[in-house]
Length: 631
Ligand code: COA
Ligand code: AMP
Image 1 (cartoon, rainbow, N blue to C red):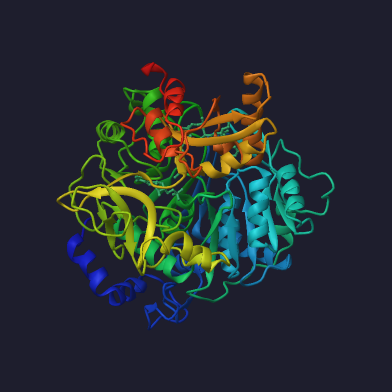
Image 2 (cartoon, rainbow, N blue to C red):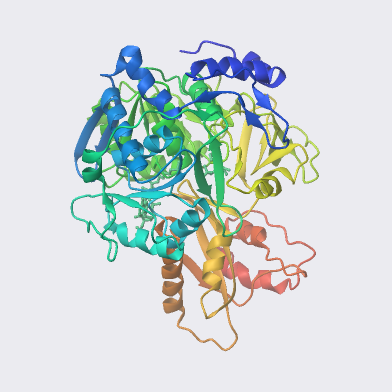
């Protein structure tokens, strides 16, 4: 139920930010309650609640058991892949997490150590995350769709004391053996002797060749001594989550403990309107920030029940899968990516599947991860008959920058807009020089410093990269990398990225990283990868390659090789399936490839050819490739 006033709340969060967040901090149980909200001594790096002490796992689990809600469901696992459902009460989940924390401790994991978690969507992934947090250690979860090389880059950067994995993951079209990937990644990272704990799943190899000493999850759990929650400073890191930057090297976003617990608790009540006893289902993956915040931490911090779904929106077995889960688990709030809604709509435009299920418990549908197009927004609202809330955020911010806060006030919706800035996000739209643009004009979306609690503290062991990547472009502000505009009511419309990041099915990818892989093929002289509009996935990556002089490769064969190369080096998640050989790429006289112009041509938009173009004829040649219907 809406219980406040958005504008008053927002103004207070900007004008009296310290008092605002100290009050919000009362929603968390502290071992030492913070007296100070903000430490500005290392600006532009800011730390929230510098004198607070807590444990996040305790706040997510034990606290609710102690409050008498131990019998309530904390986690419901629903696997559409296996036809399995399993419920965990708060008491049971707390016990399993304490026990697995004991397993990690026995492997030598201590406060501040890193634990890499590479797992499919099974309860043990959640248990491993919460167990790591229980020890005051730092988890780094890597999405299962990444290839060994990407896993290796993350292992190398984080330097884990242990890796937790499972023997396999199940995709509709194939079974994914995890252990060879983990073994290869450890080799590549030069970390062969890192302890590995494996949750065995039926139908997969349980041991990687040459790694017989890896520990078995079930056997280790039996022998483990449960570990108590370890106090950490609010400013100590809870997790690292790597995300695509504009180069091939992923950025290790660091989230702290205190600010994260405070901010997520605030969002559960005020944005999602979810409290103790409610059921929230976030249909994402624990490998993404949406999974970290709203499969794992947010709902559990709020004492709600969270649903962990192993399956897809369509094909497992049909387009009614989501409605079946809502019915079976009496879901109150569903959060998913627009791609999933588009996939359901494509398979079942009249929502005939919906009529087979009782979804009357559903109060609100939230969408994020990519732009929610107006058509999908309207369709979802019409078929479900509940408010559809688009909200905009990033791995870096950890929670919504803009949303329609359902627990705070019933604000009007506007199709295509994620509504208004959330507390602490001092949002401005500026031009390239940092000057504010006219209202209604598109520009760079920037956020004034400090960012609110729960946002990134820095990049893992790289304050300089944090500053140069986010804080250098616009003095005193954080650059979101997104462009957009605000209307007369202040509603924000997010239009797309201003950098070389693309969004495929709600997954964030670096075109630079894909280009790096393609360029490594011996036949390729140069290449450009752009994100082209895709009716299902929002965008897909499309590669344009120029062959080395004298190379006369069979084009079909070459393209198959390039696709395989990207899959091997980045992973199936890149979903790279489109590549074309071209004679030349359009470039400026200084050699910069005009990717934006290429994308505009491919998307059928008006395009601008800069006067600095080296050879204007190249655009004419490319028109036939990028926009074949125009020639
Ligand atoms: N482990 C291994 N492989 C994975 C994987 C995982 N965890 N997740 C995805 N993949 C693979 C898929 O099997 C697929 O491989 P393929 O090329 O061999 O078929 C590839 O990566 C692309 O996967 P996906 O993007 O899921 O495409 P799809 O065509 O299989 O499914 C949708 C289409 C719309 C059903 C799917 O994209 C979807 O559910 N999207 C919602 C995304 C989402 O929730 N994002 C969260 C961000 S908040
Ligand atoms: P990620 O860090 O993977 O969550 O990706 C963040 C990026 O996804 C943002 O910078 C946006 O470009 C895009 N994005 C996420 N949510 C939205 C949304 N609701 N509307 C528009 N773009 C979004």
